[in-house]
Length: 274
Image (tube, rainbow, N blue to C red):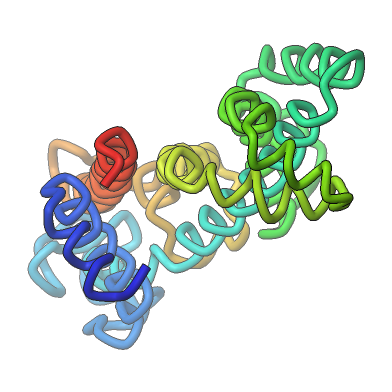
């Protein structure tokens, strides 16, 4: 697909375009925010919970809320994107292999997958993180990513079941193509639209889980600015100085809305078959 055609398809879908704009803006805030912040993320600029400093006032230590919002999104976004990518890769591999193999292997893999689906995602993460003194970023990536995999596998298997029995797959097998090549060249390219929509939803959940872990005290760097940690730190003064809580909540909410709109737009494009 050429770039002009892709842009035209995006422009024809208002949900996708709106979600893309919101997501890109929030991502840019997280990426370039540290260079735009009027103060350092740990600089004391006034008394706690006052309107000193910049326009959003100060937090529980007297640090500038706006500066910490600008500095606090990078780690959440990076961990969420990596966890989503890991969950999608592992889940798609499990689902497609199960659908293509069929028989007892499909049945065994899916039953184990159902067992994994029974565990709430954040509960699994908390179970492991409570056993370590200080969680590392890669640990959270693995926990969140592998918790996504069973849900992605269920979707990938359902989509792949409608593809593996088609004529072009059968023809490739008759020509002596290896199973790996059939999966990579014939099955996966025809799953793009639903998998992209699922990736948008998984990214939304990743943001929520990672921010929730930060709120519960499982941040990778407790001293650094973090949107989830900010909500927990400043919640006791919500009525006195609400921006310490509302600012990170709003930006997390905007990112969630943006990724959900993107997922809906991709699903609608796939349904229209443009």
